[in-house]
Length: 129
Image (tube, rainbow, N blue to C red; front, side, top):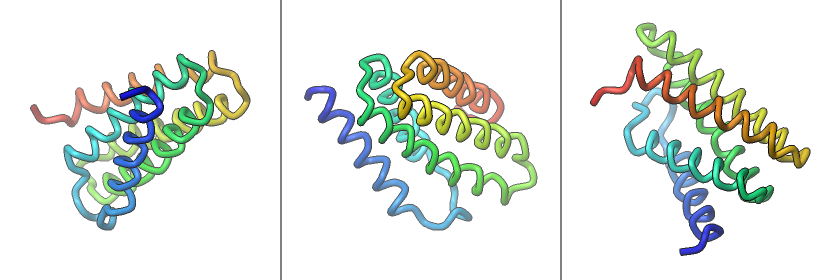
């Protein structure tokens, strides 16, 4: 499968997760998180290859998904840090999108690297093995 088909498949899966997702009060589950991970990896690859169209689609997907994640954790008082992680990661996805739209792939790559670190930092606190 070539990269464009992989990117399209990742976007379709992510869209299906978002569009078919119940309201934010339902659990953010492992499948959604795997979808985020796949989309972030796709975004990183798209930015490295300077594929603006695919990268922008991935970044938009992440902005929307992290808004959902933030809303989900915002309803749980014991996960206040997760709200901050989700908000920060959403901002990084938005920064990446802005850089992609400006054809500044170096800045986009920096935002994606920070986004990946933000995900890892949250998982260190909340991910259950």
